[in-house]
Length: 286
Image 1: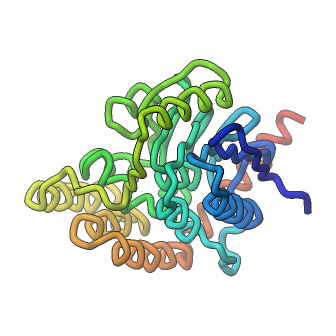
Image 2: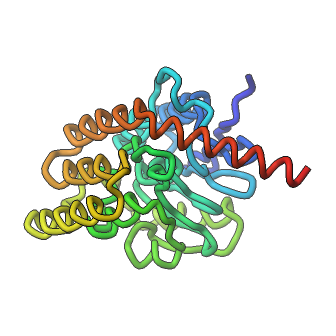
């Protein structure tokens, strides 16, 4: 299988390009190639900053759903996002299109993020009976606060780029081509000598007292309105872990809760329904 990840270098910027049509889905092969590319860039003494971007209509639009229910293959998404975050050179994710699920989690692993003004960002895993399993439940609350993270994770509703900018989820918006805008921002970061900025090490913006109140209120709402949801209370538990544990322990808790969801009959039924609806749509179009 030909690699869909390509790395070149322009001056001190390593350009990691993903080309995995139609939606740059984050399957096992893509995860492995991305991990290799980031490690290679880290070891290149001429590289000062690593820039990740995608060609086609969208940034990474999520996981490869065909892999759900199959045995996990390393690197799992948590391993990839943690390796990106732990890099010693600043990394920049250049976002466009639909930045969803694992795509947003990869972006959260990068130290800086910019987005096209028409980008939509979200963690829709609950719609498939899952929770974000690539560190999203641990990094998102640290970046945007517990209230917003709970809303995005439990409802699965995406947000617009303008709101992401207001929340600090992205650092800037652009309207050019991703490569052009990305290189411009990368050069700006280099000129400013921007440091490595790891989301997993950011101090939680929500106080423990506020977080407890928000989680308790959301738990009551889930009990009242989503009593049959297997994943929603586990999303809540994962976010709660982010408010109480360092990143390493929170990731372990997230992984355990993710595997509970993956083994759930509800998850299997929702994904079967997803494929059935997609097949029906194709038949109507064909």
